[in-house]
Every structure is written in C-alpha cells, then in structure tokens.
Image (cartoon, rainbow, N blue to C red; front, side):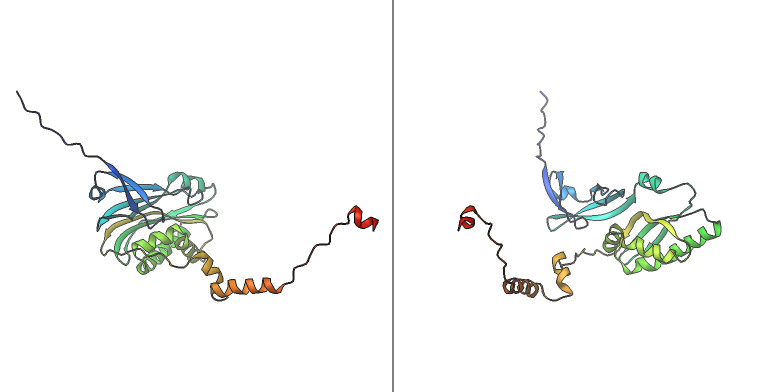
Length: 235
C-alpha cells in the first residue's frame, strides 16, 4: 500500500503592523510575523484626505520581531484628475527622476492652468517645475517627502513658485515612486501635542491653567434675585 504523507496544517493569525505614515496600526494575516516581510499593501486615503483621491502603497518590513510599513508609492487616482479638468484650460505634466536625501525617486507633477495658454507658457511652467522639484527634494528623505505631500505643504510651495509665471487652478503630485532606498531612516513624528502648541506663544501650559483658575476665584459670583412668591407679596 502506498504511504500517504501527512501534511501539517499551519494555523494563520493576525499580526499588528506599525504604520507611522497614517498613525494607525494595521492587522495582516499570515503564518508568522516573518511571512509578512516584503509584502505590499494598498491604502485608499480618499476619506482621510476629505475627498481627494489618493492611494498609497506600503511595503511591510520586519525588524527585531516587529513589523512596520514603509511607504513605497503614492498615486493620485484618475477619477480625481478627470473631475478637476475643465473646458477652456490646459494641463502640464512631467516625469522627473531625481535623488532625495536617502533614496532615488520618480516624481510626476500635474498642473492645470486657469485658462488656455500658449505652448511657450506651458514649456516655461514645465521647466520651472522640474528645476524647483530637483532642488527641493534634496532637503528631504523619503519619509519626510511622503509626509509633506500628504499634508499638501509640498504642492502649496510649488504653486506659489509657479504663480509668478502663470496663475494655476490645480497643482498636484500625481505619482511619487521610490525606486531605490540607499539608506534606512526612521520616521520621527513631532512630540508636541496640539493643546501645547496653542499655549506655546503665551507661556507654559501649567502657568496658563493656574492663571485661569486664579482669575475665576477673584471674580465675585453674582447671585440671581429670588422670584417673588405669594407669601412675600402678602407680607
């Protein structure tokens, strides 16, 4: 009789994956935590970006028995671009390969003008965009670059630089692709909390709270006059 080989069934379970880009942990299904290494995950951030169609692709890495997600690609979804294009306008796009602090990247800007413009204006916008992006990304690592684009800071600065040539109705980054990471960098979020930043200009948070408490003690409390009842009226 032929001997049947017994196959061992491996129970799969969920593992926590740290995602510093969005600040929310993810759960991925696998045999063990090492099986998650090198896996890619897509996240649709349209809801978090208030209707702006953005998709991010993350690469899972495992280090010291801990899984974390590192950004790999960023895409502006096609339906959002089609919704932004209007009749009587022109658009400018380009593909730029350049290095940032710790990686080689490909970045594709997408610009829409307010009205129809001649080819010379479109060409000057394209050249200015390429020059500005190549110089700007040298100051960022790939973590900071993703963070700045998701917060829309990068696009605002680019739009202000291009406004001197011609006013724009839209200035966006359509694609950001990490081709090769030359040096690993850990993403560090700011330690300050929002409530502390509000009181930072006026002084320490504890001093402000104690000041408010003291002012409330000094203010005399006004008692409301009692309503006249039938007994007081008779007296």
